[in-house]
Length: 517
Image 1 (cartoon, rainbow, N blue to C red):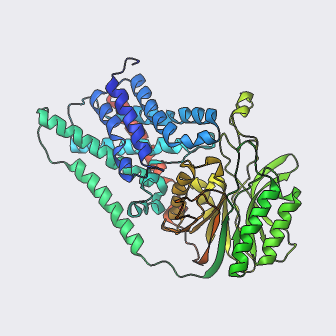
Image 2 (cartoon, rainbow, N blue to C red):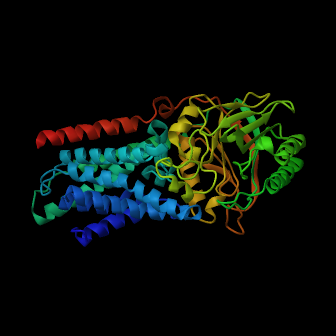
Image 3 (cartoon, helix red, strand yellow):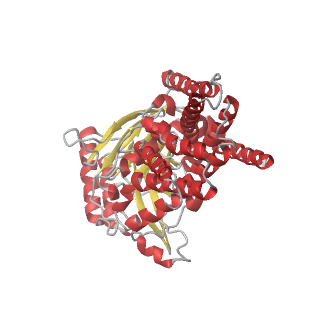
């Protein structure tokens, strides 16, 4: 097909589907380590042309993204197809680089050469993954490292270099296995002599050091608490339609009903959290919503953090609004800074106006200008609010963490995704923000996974119906949390140095190739 052997298409499809198995709803961490092997092995063995490498890499990416992001169909089928076919460009670029780095003679391999090639291949993967997360504001969900979220020993290195460092280690391991298998084949055929496998030893060493760091982190006692916070997060499970939001009266009624259950039965609490805006109107214009806020505060919510649209003149913001301090005091507001592509804004819409029709109404929001910390009165506890997918965007959460909050709080509405894996994938990505910053993360969702995540990525509490085996039922989480003064992690201070190092290594590899030509 298209002049490429069917074996190539098969290997590309196998890699794409293998990557998908690493994420929800399958949750197979081992798949993350093995998925790159079929396509990488094919590229190492056959040395496809530039055209063939791009097509096969693109096919692998399209297979992966169309399957792992199939939940986007619940919002926009056309947007799902366009977005996934676009994102497949990045695995195509990775495979082209991998083929270029594989050397001019596929019949000769050495330990030093293999280690260098694997370092370049893992770095190229991290670089292309990073590009996917920033171009057109980016959609960086489900980086390779996210597949390791349930293997907490491996995930802990995210506080050193973010989830990108986890991706690098996983890619390094998979590509090491690829070249080890290829080298075995050559030695068995007699194409080269049997020699010590220092390349495989290097892969084992990287994995071992990663696990040692993770074990030490998990066993280390937590820092002493300086604040005690009583909290509750409400999951009202108001039915949503992407093209027609719920009525504000129904939203307000459900929020008040569940808040009353929490507050009357458990007494006053320091922080009550409602999810992201569930209706297509702003809180300033809706008396029913304002009345709901007043009711909850009078029932015992010393502070209330809620999501709402905020209309200011010609602009509309997706905001987190904190009501704290004496009744009647003006609330503190944070405006979402990272808008969702094909959801809250449409790229290139001025050039292609027809694209506006592919996404739900409301896709023309204004982005906030900067991260902001909201402070509770009178305790002085500092919250870093995150709205919708912002808890899946590492660089944005890092900016908030640099302001030394005590707690990350995410307000989201995953009801658009129905019973698909979208909400689970959202939670899996969010867990790494807690690990990267070593801050607890409290999530309040309308219909998703309302949960409390520890600074080590452990899910401490979540809304879950054991009888229905569903996280989509209405409910709440309630508890007491010991908060420590935050200290910047290596990642918080230095950011995506893994990406910078990967970029430098890839550039060095390309320069070396040019000099060899």
